[in-house]
Amino acid sequence: MSESFETNPSIDVNFADAVTGAKQIQMLGLSGIYTQLTTENMPDIRGLASTYGLSYIPGPWIESIQVTKGIGSVANGYESMTGQINIELKKPDVTVKKGEKVYANAYVNTFGRMEANLNIATKINQKWSTATLLHGDYMNNIMDFNKDNFMDMPMGKQANFVNRWKYEHKNWIVQFGGKLLLDQRNGGQYQNSTSGIHSSHSGNTMKLYTTENYTQRGELFGKIGYVFPEKKYKSMGLQMSGMFHNQSQLYGYIFNIDNIKISSRTYNGIQNSIYTNFIYQSIIGNTNHKFRVGTSFVYDIYSEQRLYIDYENRITLSAQPRFEIVPGAFGEYTWTPTPKLTLIGGLRTDYHNLFGLQISPRLHGKYDITEKTQLRFSGGRGFRTANIVADNFGYFISNRSASFIGSYDFYKYPYGINTPEIAWNYGLSLSQDFRLNYRKGNITLDYYRTDFEKQVVADIYSDVNKIQYYVLSGQSYANSFQTEVNYELIKRLDVRLAYRLYDVQSKYISGWQQRPFIAQHRFFINVAYETKSKWKFDATLNWNGAKRLPQTNEYAQKYSPDFITFNSQISKSFGNVQKHWFDVYIGGENLTGYRQDLAIINAQNPFSQGFDAAQIWGPITGAMVYIGGRYKWK
Image (cartoon, rainbow, N blue to C red; front, side, top):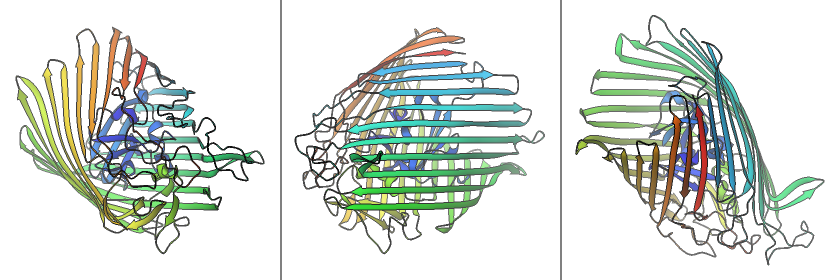
């Protein structure tokens, strides 16, 4: 899914570190943990899944992606702070307009990654339809562009499966299904280096710094919807899901004790979750007054264990069991006094068993200044629980020691002193449609600000040898300004230009600092062209400005250089669009070949205090070219 955001200037996707291959998104200048990621409007990538979650939804499964900036609707939960990304998967409906009976995709790239996808949809009768989505990928190739003895991308394999059913009859719609994911990744050093620290565990032999990650994830989900036959404006729906997530991570020096794998840094995390959401909507008098009310219930069980052997062979063992029970209720009122103005006011009330009563007011509005000029605005409050390991996993791929500041034990209370992360977000967006040389265009200006009432930070500024965790109280903010222009330059040639400015700062122990690894400036251009003979051309250029870097004992550079990346794809379609057709495509990513000059600090001495693979501000691999084919039968 991470590759789906390449043509969206509002979202950045970056590597969390230089070893594990984990990717993370940024939106409105903040980490993706503050953006609510849902699948068909149900929470999906959250909690422990935030480390590798972007790789859990294959691109060929996706029907559409909706990106909403700013605070989300109260009906979708309490965790949205900077926005919502909702993924719609391909549905079981098998009609020419709604989907394909068969969709097959095969892909291979010059890094050695191979991927295959198969979607099969069947319409059983007028009421029932079903779909099966299959994905598998495999990589068994060592890449080391900078010759530092560390693999730039981990090797691994993934098997991913979804089976879903849909029943539709009269005024009822019922959907249900299940998902299953098995994922394995192996990275780190691939041969003995010339230096290494000996220990009793290694038997006085050279050690390799390696990483292994094993993930098992399963989910059952269901939706029931009913529309009242005589009053189409009145409906009710129930969403339900149950999920388990089991993740085991070994990184550092891996050894065996009684045939059990243990490493100098071992992490085992289990999350079991239950989610329900009931929504009822209707009108008051007429459609100028609409409302939605409902109740929700979130139940999370986290069980985390972490074994840490530092570079001086000191052992730390921690356990982090946590139960979260959050019943909630919400109401939302939509008022349309004139065709030009729409106001939506919402209020959520949630009772968190750890944090107590949480009230989240939210307001959204839209005003049509003219027929071609629209003003949108929003504001509100959101909250979430911090997950120290999952939220900051990249920082653990280093030999910095962890320090927890405050009158509490973060290993016992990883969420602070009964304090959630709380943020207020508010913003404006102005959109102007225009026509130039008889062709349509649009320009959008938006500004959003996020103010934290409480935030858990990982401070890598105040001590070059430590990661210090503590709770900030109202001393962190993010400003985001973006302008975007879309225009059809000539027939079938669409151009998108965007410029974005971020000002993201927190008051650490050492004082006010820019948040690390965030580009203050970004310029984006995307060009897409399609011919009558079914050729498609797409090219995207990104200029990323300098990013603030923390200083280390080995690396004193304060800002990264700016850099440019270029992605492109060419595809050709064959066949009858109404029945079946075949696409072939070829493309490339980071075709400028730009790479961060020092991806891993002290890579030649990975068991020393100065080792750090988390200082990532740019691409860590060179240019990559891929080729593939798609077959669709409607």
